[in-house]
Length: 91
Image (cartoon, rainbow, N blue to C red; front, top):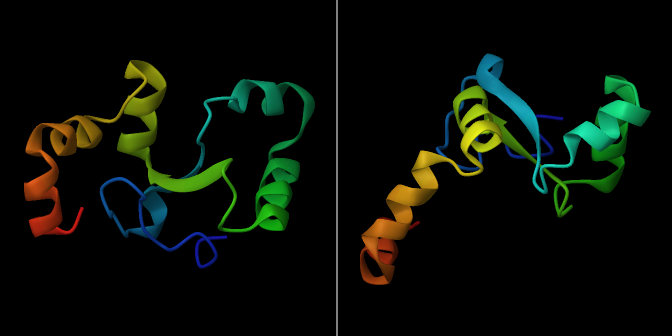
């Protein structure tokens, strides 16, 4: 799963394996957890593959912030940089 989805947090690039979790991009995790076992969700993510619009890897910090605040603070930082600075740092 980690290799398939890139081995790093899609938001902050954290690469410590123990910190990474599967994120439901559309915040619909509760629907899947209501109807599926965790192993079934991971199997579905593996079947959909890394180009899926439904899942990605995030670290626990980014994932929790997204769950609580509906955005990650890293995303707000990038928005404040502006397009020209984003290109310079490769975001």
